[in-house]
Every structure is written in structure tokens, then in C-alpha cells.
Amino acid sequence: MMADVNDNDLKQDVADEGQQAEDRGEATMANWAEVEGAAPFSFTPGEIVEGVVVGITNEGVAIDIGAKYEGLVSRAEFAATEELPAIDSKLEVAVMRIDEENGVVRLSKRRADFQRVWNDLEEKARTGGIVDAMVTDRVKGGLRVDVGVPGFVPASQVGTRDVRSLERFVGRSLRLKVLEADRRSKKVILSHRVVVEEERERRREETLSKLEEGAVVEGKVRNLTSYGAFIDLGGVDGLLHVSEMSWSRIKDPSEVLHVGETIQVTVLEIDREKDKISLSLRQILPDPWKEAARKLRPGQLVQARITRVVRTGAFALLKDADIEGFIPVSEMSSRRISDPSELLKPGQEVDLKIMDIRIEARRMTLSLQAAEQERERQEYQDYMATQERATVTLGDRFGALLKQVGNAEPQTEAAAKLDTPASGADGQEGADAPEAPPAAGDAAGGDQSPTEA
Image (cartoon, rainbow, N blue to C red; front, side, top):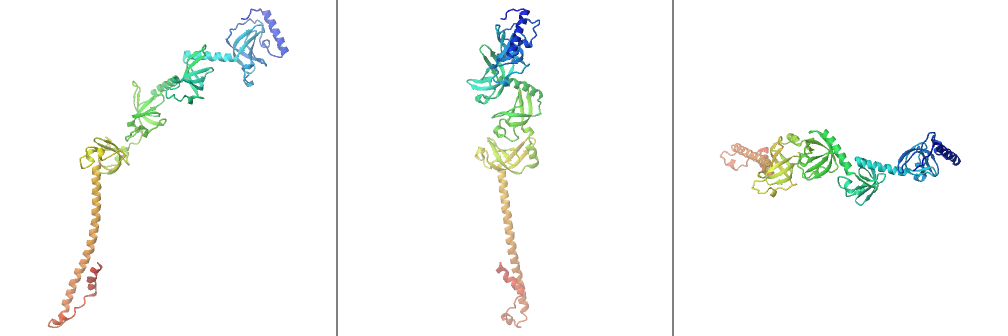
């Protein structure tokens, strides 16, 4: 370490440095330190100190660190001129070694940066601190990141979900928690998953404090299952059961939703002890049963599509009402049916008759048999109406003709009787005499009408 010196020796050294500096045209410690009353100062190799930039030469950057020695950072540590610090700016440097023979303290900015990074990493490892780092490479078992020194994120610590394709993280900046920092072995282990989980827990607590039953909230579809969908409400998931996705029956949630979609839902129930939240989508959708109350009546014929066939009957979705009704097996046919699938299949479109509808209970009974009977009755009525029109038309026509013929014959006989006395007195002449011609109108009407007919 440094040898002890008295004030006179220190003053002489400073004076000599000043003269040498003037000869070289460089700035030295003699130009920027008052030496009156100065005392020797001790440094520990590896110690980080803050100094002031007092000069820049081809050899390096002169730093005032408050000692009798000149502090110098090699210019090689600055890759470009733009990286050189400005005069009078402050700079943290590490003490590398003390050159007592030449009166120079060798300093390093890189070493100071390196030491500062490790000091910071070790502190964060103790306190659970978080750093932002760029992913530089995908390596075996995880990711390599730059935290000032090389760091490693194991694959199991990358995220909470699918981590099979780690290449997608390369070039991205991640928030990482320092799990371990070992300066000797130069090993830094970090975790992104822990940060995600902690932030999610924080958001979960915030979300739960704001949620209340009956509230309409916005969420993102995180996952779909056979029985429903999990909706991320902001750090906490709620379950949207398939029965609450629509007023009509849904076979698969993918018919209505897709992963990543943002939707609005109603909070049905919050169970804080079991950490469960029940949601509903249909509660904020128009109720088709209310519309059905205005449009549908018992006895009405409707078109529907068979959605399900069960042992006791079949469910059918009305085409224009978007509600389901039930067809009991007894309403399917006049003959005995042991299995409803003998007549109906899912997806089949049929005509049905509404037998009963209860809006409050959201129940509707439909009949296939009654619809067929109604259709047959309507066809018979249409047929009879056609026959009725045809019979009346022919009867009217032939009845008029027959009436005309009947009217014409009596008129001819009467005319003959009137003409007979005018013939011979004995009646013989009347018999032999030609008959008087009938009136023009009567003859024509009586003889021509049948012919025309």
C-alpha cells in the first residue's frame, strides 16, 4: 500500500507534478487539488470510488479521486469518442492498483460497472428484487439474458403456461426476479414465472376487492373446456359455465367463444373461501322467452330443428324464436314408439305444433303428431273447398239449361191448343194442318240451349 509521507514531501510532489504537466501540456492532480493540509489517503484494490473528470489525454481519462495520486482510466475502456465522459462530470471507477513509483492510481470504469452490477444483483438476491433484462439467446434448458453480466432463466422459470417454444422470447425484454447471484462462480439465476405470479396475485387482490355480485365486468377468454370457459378478470379467473353462455342449449363452448376474445359478463356468485367466481353471459343478452311471449301461442304451427334426442322425447330449437321446446314421445306419432330416434335425428328440421307454453317456467311442449294431423286436416279442407267450387259451377250451369228447356215446352203446347179451333170444324183439319210455328224467342231458346250445352 501507500508509504507514509509528510506535508513538505507532499507539497514537493505536487509541485513536481505541476511542472511535468506543464511540460507535457496535460492536466494533473496538481491543477485541481489544494495540497495545503493534505494528508495521505488509503485505497483498497477493488474499491469503488466516485471522482471528477479533470482531463482527457491520448493515454486515458484523468480522474480526481481526492488523493495525492493521479487517477487514470485507460482510454481503451472507451470504445468510441462518443463514450468519453465530459470534463467536470462525475464518474464511478474501481481502484485497480496503486503505482507508487510513478505516483498514479490505476482506475477502471469497466471494473466499477462490473462490481456495481454484482453488488446490485447480490442485494436483489437477498431482498427479492426485480430487474429488466433482454433475452439474448435460447440455450439448452432455458434462456440467456443480459443483466450487465450473463444471466440464466431456466425453462421452468420462464412462464406459467406453455414454454415449449422458448425461441419466441429471444429479443424480448422480460421482468425477472433474482433468485441467486454468486460472484465467485459468476452465476446468476433469474425467474420470469415468479414475477408473473406475484403480479397476478397483486392484481387478483385488487380485482377481488372491486368485484360484487350482479356487476357487469370485462374479461378475456383464457381457456375453453367441455363444460365452460375460464375468463381472466384481471389476475383472477371466473368460470363461465356452458349453461350460462346462451339462452339456447350449446353443445360446445367453441360455438360461442374463442380463446383471447374479450367479452362482458355478469358476476353471479363470489365464493371467497373457495376462491370461486361464477359468471354469466346470457344474463346480459336479450331474453328470447320474453319475445316468445309476444309471438307464440298454443295451437300455433312452427318450424324447428331437432337438437337432442333422449329416451323420453326430443328437444327442438324453434327457427324464428331461438328457444327450445320438448317433444314427448307420446306426441311423436299415433302408433307406439319404443325409441324416439326411430323418427327423429339431431339436425333434422320438422314442423311442430305448440301444445303448451309457460314463459315463466321457460317450458314449451311441442307435438309432431298434432302438426301432421293439422297439416292433413288443412289439406282435406283445401281439397273439399276445391270440390265445392267445381260442383256448384256445373250444377249452376246445367240447372239453368234444364230450366230453360222446361219453360220452352209448355209454351209450345199452349200455342198448339190456341191454334186448333181455327182449323177445320171437325177437328180433322186441325190434326192434318201444319203446326203453328212457335214464337221465335221460345223456339230458339228451347232448341238451341241443349245444343250449346
